[in-house]
Amino acid sequence: MALNAEEVDTIFGYPGGANLEIFDVLPRFNIRCIRTEHEQGAVHAAQGYARVTGRVGVCLATSGPGATNLVTGIADANSDSTAIVAITGNVPLHLLGRNAFQEVDIVAICEPITKRSIQVRRVADIPEVIKGAFELSASNRPGPVLVDIPKDIQQHYPRDLDGNYVEPRVPAAIDPQEPNIQAMTDQQLVEASRLINESTRPVIYAGGGIVISETSDRLIQLAERLDAGVTTTLMGHGIFPPGHRLSLDSLGMHGSMYANAAINEADLVIALGVRFDDRVTGSVNKFISQGKIIHIDIDRDELNKNKTVTLPICSDLRFALNQILDVVEPKQCEVWQTALGKLKERYPYPMPQTSNLTPQEVISLVSDVTEGEAIVSLGVGQHQMWAMQHYRSQRSRSFLSSSGFGTMGYGLPAAIGAKVAQPDRLVIDIDGDGSLNMTIHELATCRRMNIGVKIIVINNQWLGMVRQWQDMIYDGHRSGSNLSNPNIESGEIYPDFLKIAEGYGIKSNRVEDRASLRLAVEEWLSDPNEPYLLDVIVERTENVYPMIPAGGSYYDTIVDDAGHRPLRHRDSTE
Image (cartoon, rainbow, N blue to C red):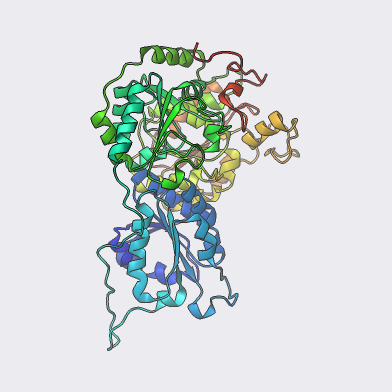
């Protein structure tokens, strides 16, 4: 009933002894349960659902290992500001603390990785706790909330003095106990306007906060008003049109050369809904070392945490961007835009020419065929970075990536959640062979529930990013990163994803040459509601470039296997 009050119609979960009472009543309240093959799949699916809808995703697990199997996904949601409510069963109250079968203090475990972890200890508290959990999860900076419900609390229905069932009161509103963060102060607006008006080389650095606040339209307006280039984080992919003249694409360790040069040579950086992550900044002391910075974020704790800025502003972007647009005058930065245009022409993302298929051309083709309109989910690794570079998302809430936590195995279950939430849209999991292996059992969920996710495997037979780092940093010691089977006949693909897919009843195909790629991709996408795995064998040792070494600056950017650093000895905006 409490979930009905929050208009929950879908949850993702796995049944067990300590949550069967909840599973038992779900049909009575018309709540659809997508039973995944593993609790980690359930929490990632809830994340995918939340990311594409802007609503709170819900997952449900039993006690003990069921609850702890949610932890990775909960931490992932916390890192990427994803609104989910994770509900766990637990042993009865009188057994808590007695090391009972499948008992675990999941509340304590999840305390550091949630906005709040709550254990319900009275039946009458359930409605208020659930309502508060949903409001807290979605408010301000979204994130996960855990609600743990012991088995005896699930079993005891509220009754009157005559023993009749009484529907519990559902409160109309609950204070989520977070400050109501809204507009910039007048003083902040005056100072921001001054810094903007004085700048001649502005750059906007935008991230997931734009997605959450649904302010992509205002971001575009601001960029055009200020004639400012826009670079986005991995979490912000899709918030700014990739073909726009002011687009600088993504920045950071594997971002574009022109984005990294622009943000470091700007005289003003307007940072919107970002957290100055180390994968973006590299050496934080060298990052934007000369320019001034305005940082606007709804989370006060992110201001001046990783990077000390000129003007920190705690505000909701829905208010702040409107305020800025109301007061700033249009700017023309012709000299600056000309310089950035030359950088974009000189340093496009690499598209290697080899006899074998390359990951870059495969993902670029998928982008072209779908016209950037698909919802794309990703695993973690090299393919994730190539997708960031070459999949040209045209819409916000359409590019799902485990960005801050880097969780391998995220791609397939997140895609399942996205397809359940948006059944009329094409949903693609771009995955790596290593990452997909971690949650490939969720193909069973696709078949059993008839969820039409398209999976494309960028298959290079390596843990590719690990192998790249081993080659570049660890003297080529490829310890533990080879995914092929050294004992099988040379040239045989291992593991055989086609046989695995067949075992799960999923249609599949394999591509090994350029001539058959387009036709295979078109067939793979022909029925948007049919689950289908396409295994694409690519150049085994292709590396992701450009690359800023960990702890380096944009002047250290490496562009090829020879280790060339073209920006080290020149003014990059010449």
